Amino acid sequence: EGQRKDIETDVAPFLCSQRLESPQRRMAYFIWSPTLACNYTCAYCGCAAGEKQLRKEFPSADPELTVDEWIDVWSDILDRFDYGILSVTGGEPLLSEATIPVLGMVSQKFACYVTSNVSRNVMEFSRGRIQPGAPRDVEGFGRVPVGLSGVNCSLHPTSKGFNWELFKGAVLLLRNAGFHVSVNYVGYPLQLYLAPEYKAWCEEHGIEFTLSSWQGVDNDGTVARYSPPERAFFE
Image 1 (cartoon, rainbow, N blue to C red):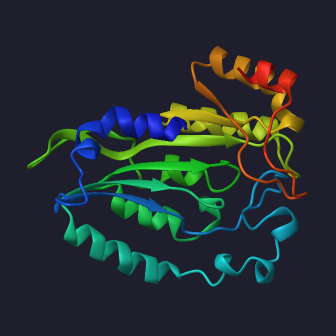
Image 2 (image 1 turned 90 degrees about the horizontal axis):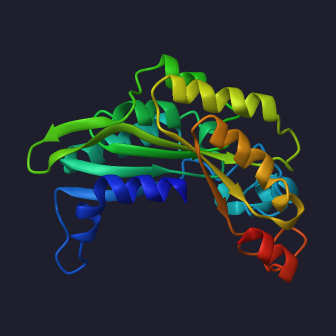
């Protein structure tokens, strides 16, 4: 949700002008999931984690492309377009060895946005060749964002392996390295009432906090819905 807000603010005029009957040939909006695997075990998530952590039980998570194969794919895309927007998601995208190299390439030309639980490889952003998003003049498009324009940090306190102190450290590291960060929190009933605690920390540090509604079906087969008290609290 926070990522979509960033994209809509930065490049809304281009997205609004896209039409299936007359697409812009020189720019495009991409959503990339380099992996569907995840190192977290959230009960409400359908990625290859938790009860589905064995990839043989989650066929669409395996096999994955190699780093070289992804580099070839994105090299071809960069040759075909003058400008673009890339939204990186997963699974947990930082589990893929291809994510950092691809972002290093694509962020030289496109506006990039990443959604991650920021539990792995976060220092690669602050010490690599991935630059924070900044306006740049692009021929034919005027002044548009280029670089890593947003990191949407997904907060999962009820997952096995979650560490609140490390999460805070990762968010602050990214922010102090110049990246725009936001925090997204799913209002799953078993963690819904913890939201004020985490929202307060974000507000204290000037970080946007978004509470997203629980959607879909959890790993126990429970269809997403809120009781009247949960709905009132969420709203």
